[in-house]
Length: 419
Image (cartoon, rainbow, N blue to C red):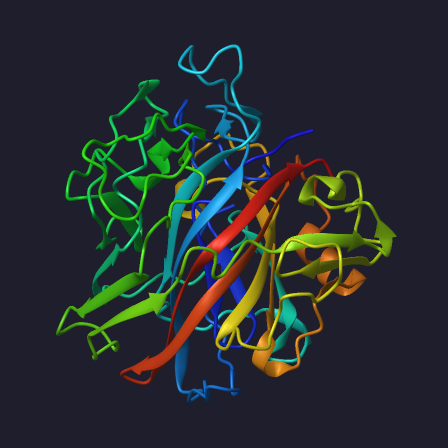
């Protein structure tokens, strides 16, 4: 069984989320550095009307920024292949290395064109599916981003988060994180890349966060809030909110309005969603329980969830949680899609399903993966493994130029499973 972490989660206006989250059809990795990124088709337009009113004009493709604390097993792509393996943590935590670790993931999509997804459900509560093929003529790829400007994410915990460097196998000290994640457009591949601080050698996907006992009081003297008993258990610990700052490039882009938004997070708001049942089978409370269910897409898969960690479908969702949504991303490949086109990739084809369930839109508290969606994502080729990510997000809607613009932040989990 394979498990892994997404580099980003992203939710589009109508029904979509991309979390950078099995591996794999097309990805040839890039060595031993865990790569949890994704560049899915996030260009849907949609009406997220609700309370508050999130109605957006359907003029240009939808942009989105997502920051999420996601939990899963670290994954490493094997260079020169389309497969991967679970990464082995160093002697830092041996022999009691955790089964799962945290990662702060930021996914950005400011697309320059619309995609050609197929959809099932409604704009507020439904899914879309895509299948891409880099061997087709012309190549069928996710639309590139525009050089829209710069994006900065802050508000995550920089006090009780000793980061583990997956490249060197070493752990930094408490408080060694830079308080800002800075993201900029790369003309080399047409997408955004994010780093801690300003050092290009410190991409956010390079670092994981291992839960560990916090020797109180560490740091010393104790700042406010009081030190948690477990370090790295919540990357938003003590944060008043996730701040997302978008500064437009000013020219050469159709995204013309800068903005800064703080999404109130609170100590547990929003908590990660919890699997209640899969195909009505109680006792399946993890994304790992999707192992072996995808097959060829011949059978529908239904995932029920709660928003408060209980085993009651829909519990904790809606109500006072205004502006919250639950997103699901499934994809047949790890790695950044724009890095996957090297000679020798055994199957340079990949597919995605992206779903959203919006509280304001009479949420169903279920993700229904129909056979139509599954077969679109899986295509006719082999799929080495499937990555699944589910997140609970706080959302804010605005506009930039003629584009819908969504900013979200939250918590979630991910898993790699065999089809």
